[in-house]
Length: 433
Image (tube, rainbow, N blue to C red; front, side):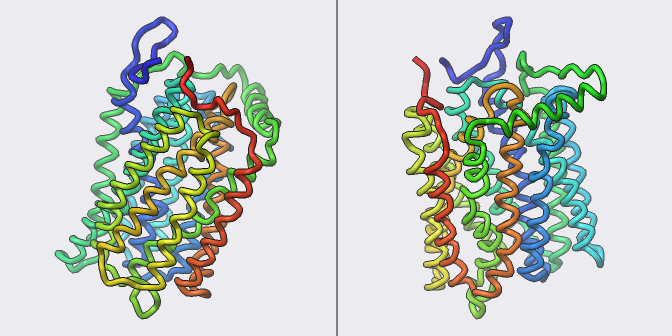
C-alpha cells in the first residue's frame, strides 16, 4: 500500500501525509519541550535552584498524566481536527503569558501558572493529534510514518533546546538583561503558534472517521466515558503493559531533568561550565542530526520487519548511550566538540529507542476507542516521567553529578525487565502483502 496518501470511504484521496504529519508533530513537541526542558534552562539562568527546578517542573507533567480523564470528551465532542486548531491558539496565548510574566518580581509563580495553561492545552492537543494520526493512516502507514512523526516531534524538542536557547543566549549577551531575553523568545513562540493555527486550518485533511460522537444525554456520555476506561483496563496482560509504560523510560526520566543543569553548572561543582548559547548549539547541531537519523532509522526497520524483531535493539539504544554523561562528568572535557559528540550519541540512541515505545502504545491502542486508549497510554508514560523526575534534583544534589549519572545507568535495568514481559504480536508494523 502506498504511504503517500489515505482515502476516505468514498475513495476520495486525502492530503499526502508529508503535508501534515511533520508539521502536526512539530507543533505537538514544541509546547512539551518548552514546558519540560526550556523552562529548566530558563529557570537555571534566572538563579532558581536545581531542587526547585526539578520538583516544580516535574509537577508540570501532571496534565499529561491525567489527560486520559478528559480524552473520551475529545472522542465524543467535536472532531479531532477542531480540537487541534483550538488548542494551538491556546498554546500561543500561554506562551505570550509566560513572556509577560518574566519581568515581574514574582516571575516564578506567574510563569509556572502560564506553563500550566500551556501544559493542559498541549496535553489536549496531543490527544486530538494522536487520534487524528490513527484515523488517517492504516497499521502499516502508522509504522512507516512513526519514525518521521517521532523525528519531527524530537526536532521540535531540539529546536526548543537548541535554536531557541541559542537565541536566548545571544539576547542575554546583547541586551545584558536575562528576563528580557527570555521574554522575547516566548513572544516568538506565541507568534509561531498563531502561524501553526493558520497553516493547519488549510492543510489538515478530513478523514472519514474523524466525526463527532453521538451524545444523546449526559447519562449516555457518562456511560460511554466509563466504558472507555473499563475497556482499556480489561485488555489482556494489562499489568505487564502498565509496567512497561511506567518503567521503560525510568532512567531517561531522571537524566532529562539534570542534563541541561549539568552542562550549565560551574566546573567547581561538577558541571561543564558551558554558556547558554553553547548548550543551545550542542542540542541544535549534532544532537539534531543524530536524532533525525535515529528516529527515521527506527521507523524504517520497524516497518520493514515488525517491532518484535527489533525490540531488544531499541531498548538497548535508548538506555546504554546514557553512559556518555557519566564519562563527561568523570573527565569534564574542555572541548565543545567532545560534548557535541557525546550528546549526539545519546540523541541517536533516543531516536531509535523511543520508536519502540511509540509503536507499542499504538499496538495497545488498536480497536475501538483508539484515541482515548492512546491518551491513557501516554498518561501512564507521563506518570513514568513525572515521578522519577521529581526526585532527580534532590538526588543529584545529594550524590553530585558523577555518582548521579552512575545511578542512572543502574536505573536502566527496569526497562530491560519490563520489555521481557510484554505481549506483542510479531506481525505488528510489518508491511502487508
